[in-house]
Image (cartoon, rainbow, N blue to C red; front, side):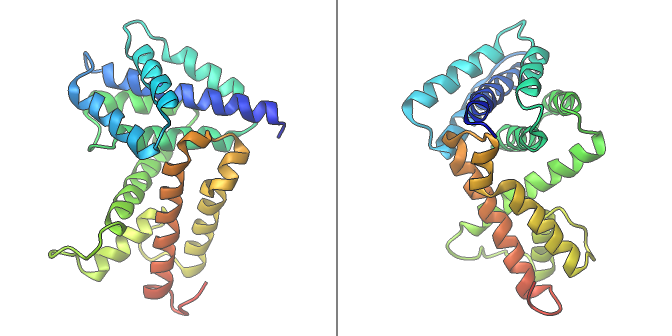
Length: 231
């Protein structure tokens, strides 16, 4: 992919994400303190530079204004990334991750995100699958950062279910199916591959964390679930 095209996708990705976050925050009648804190929390997680943080806030405010046309923003993004469908999926994944930083989406927020997903070409079935997988990855990542197991740690079967959910595979999946799902996710979320596809470097820390949770889940499954104990 030409460097100019990659640069355009990066800029459009960054602008689209934060405008849509502002739009989602306003969809239930107005932006409240919780929604502002949610955005600030994710910006801290991204480790944005002061300049990028300022730009992100300005984009958020644009999306939160009455009359903001999110259809126009999505059309611009789709036109920019039209030959790169994988980055379109990544946009939805990170929009879901950012929007759920401090907990599940409210009913109106979920309706808007579903509408965004539909305009990006994702069916309700695919959206639900992605939503569950993103939630599992984020939860697995939070758990893996704990220095010691919590007192009420769930039994190993629950751990297995969580790791399978991270990879988006069902209970009872074969070793080969799990490995296939893992390799697909690695191809999608490996930081180097994301940068090549036009993912903004400013947002790479969140991508690294997601990639680590995918890898840790797979390593856990290899040790505890695979019959052979190896891929």
